[in-house]
Image: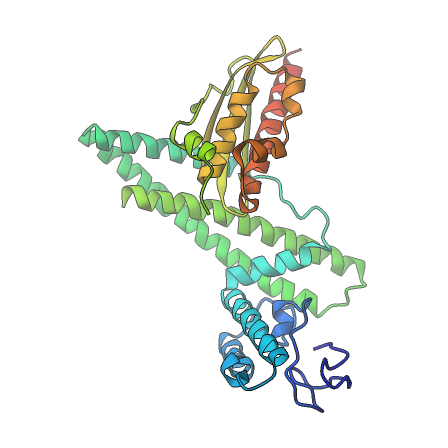
Length: 225
Length: 128
């Protein structure tokens, strides 16, 4: 934790979350990100067990119940820290949200992070939505054979889409490894920086395509069961 | 948070829902998506003598996205290509009273308009 001065005794804070001298709880800095909350490096591979243990440890340390007899200032810090910690934990625990968060954090330094819209995927989605409309119409008009034909077709499509989702997720996992490796390299090296940017962009692309796919798969499931 | 009356109206009675054949003369098609929420919007214009004579949309997403594109097609009809280019997402936000979390829906509609216009220009350029 890079914090310069204790809000209470004005001594230099050397402890991670509490002042070493006056033992007062310190606010998690407003500009500390979810990784620094947990004193973690900005890596995408996180051991769930380690994260959970740290989360429980810090939850206890900041828990408002333990600050009831302290000053208003300390109570407020304990509340803010707990809230931030909960959000940080929820975000980092889930690999997808973790990746989304990291991309968003790093995007500031990446030019042109927006990916070009995947035209063929959109076409496919619109086509499927039209089939879904036809299916709904066939259901309400009691056209049994048409309904069954469309259901079979859509189920087949869904299976195909789910396989694509799995491929996307394993692609994303391999980018986790790439990113973590790049984080150990020297950032001042232009080639490293370029590769990082490319990795972030690739992750963003997979994450957005994944959202489109998830929506259409959910729509399919809601309609054909 | 409640949707404004205008959003609900467009959602329940969407104007100009449907589509044109993509390769039809004078038709420009824009398909755009919002990666944050996964909404997909298709907006088409039909142009005759530089004026948009008809517009259609199909949107798969939330109420605000549907309302934004429905409103956009209403506005597009009768406008020239250049006038259509002037439509801003903020105009849509104002008309529909969209809350801050739904502003991206209006951005999506503006993107769709721009994409449809660009597609029309590209197609008509190829024909000349």
